[in-house]
Length: 289
Length: 209
Image (cartoon, rainbow over all chains, first blue to last red; front, side, top):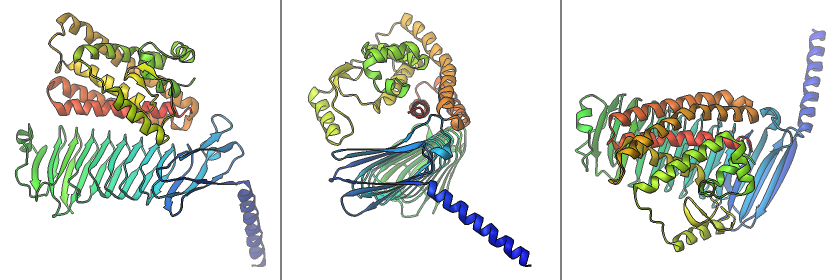
């Protein structure tokens, strides 16, 4: 028994030693930039997470933590334009060695651009425009209002929640796109085979367009939504739970395809927002929330 | 010079401009050389389609001043390019310009929006050229994958899978458009498919930065 306890103590001491060494190998860099209203921030970090949150005050504050001496953090401020970039000192550095974690605090009105291959990317509570570009990084954007949101992704998961009163444009090749309470004058989502999922009321008398090649498109709509909706899948199927009246405008070709279960079009309540759902060969499901 | 830098100056290069460095890159890079060749062809054909009317210089100056004030572009010497005289260097528009130019070429190819003055002889001459564009696409994909493999080897397989998906999208959209040349949704699908591909190419080009 005494041998077991001694062994456990020795193992614990070794773990603490290794953790200390690992912590010492990290490099922490803090940066602060004072900006005026209308500022823009660009963060380019190919490997590693980037988390952006809005705070008070007029300073952009950035903490970058790297784990290798083979990367450095470049920074530049030209008036109201701030750019921070991870710079690899050695070509073809592996993802783990090149990884830098960014924690960013910005005034709410700063326009934010983030580019990361692996991410993840998180943006919360801002009121300035948000632009993200990612390869496999998951993208999470939440609590954004009055701003344009542009997301370009290859295969990462894209999640938007509580985004309102702005133009939203999402392009993803194979990553799924999930939207909860997203509304505004314009929302456009295009994927190749990424699944598109929307839960919300299509508010603001906006234009909503979901298009893909062969992924599923699932839409969950409350009974009080006011939409002029049309859905069509060229070679897939369309399911609809909504009670719809005749559409406001003639939609060519829909009558013949409706019987084949590949299309429907109609108006719910006053038809305030225009909703167009198109898939080439995917399955479209429109359900009551 | 890297491909991403070169492609930012595409609108100026297509019209025969470009710096010595850009011309040298054009001579040495097959991907960019093929892209410029295709865009020059499509730009020439697009001029025949409808009369092009540029907005007044006052409009462009207003837009460029706003972008400079917001720090999105730096002031650059005025050069004549595809988008008209005295344009600023808007690198982020280069891929969009490429996709839009390709889309114009596709409208010509499907025959649904030809101008009345287009002759039969021109039509028969255009189709083999567009078929050549399609054949070259596989070679371009391979070169893009090699570029990714050079700079981000771990991403090569992911790019390859996504290129296959997008190419399948393009094939299906083209087939649909050929069956229904007047279907606006079919045209929209093809435009979306090419935009997806342009996005992948741009991401791959940036992987080397």
